[in-house]
Image 1 (cartoon, helix red, strand yellow):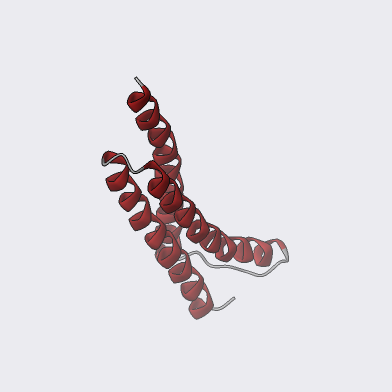
Image 2: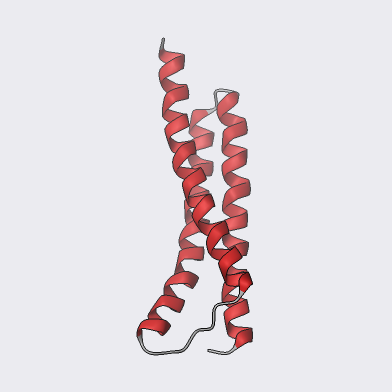
Length: 106
């Protein structure tokens, strides 16, 4: 795999995880307003973006497993960091959504 292909994959991961991150923050905003269905929809949309980012990541892993040499550059480290922190942020948002719902019940 050449450098350009690796950079394209990294930017794909960054693009999709960045969109997901922004959508999670939108979900936080509507959660605070008590719009839980809308927040849930936004978190599902964020997940769709994360799946797209994960596809790019999986292709790299499959290539590597097939014996393709992949030189890791700093942009790929950044992309992986972006993806993993966004996945974690979404998981936290899902938990917070449930907490907001329980607080409103009381």
